[in-house]
Length: 174
Image (cartoon, rainbow, N blue to C red; front, side, top):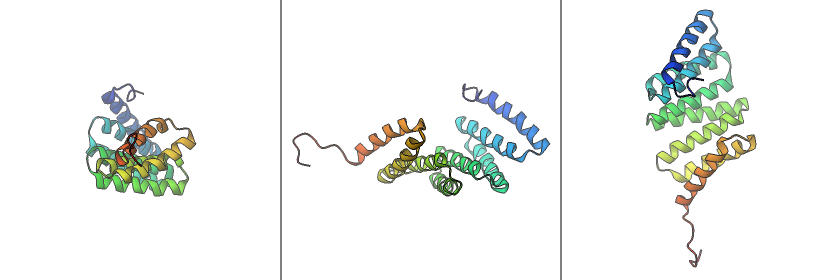
């Protein structure tokens, strides 16, 4: 809750305490979930290297535990961390892995997140047509799920499509 209120440092401290308890009790799933939560806070703080290290550890744990949806979530977070750090190749790899894992475990939401992330990476690399394709796929799934992400993504997609195919001027043959 502290993270969502913007008190990132306090949230990180709380998560560090929880992590220590989970590690001491041998609760591997809770350790991995807490690592993922801490990484999200670190992303917001711009501590991308720390976030990546935690997410790689969490992803490996989820894989070892057979928790594929949690693994897909962590891979999407890893993609975001790499993207925000400007490491587009690593971001793309993480989101592509998330696509496969989310598809295999049946998580439409994580599949949509992966497509959304791939679109952001493509857009930031100037590959607008590719970005639009990923965003169209993400939007289809977000909308079907009634996910709130659909609204902003639809606006972003419309704006992007206008740059790809500029609207025709009135009186100009199409």
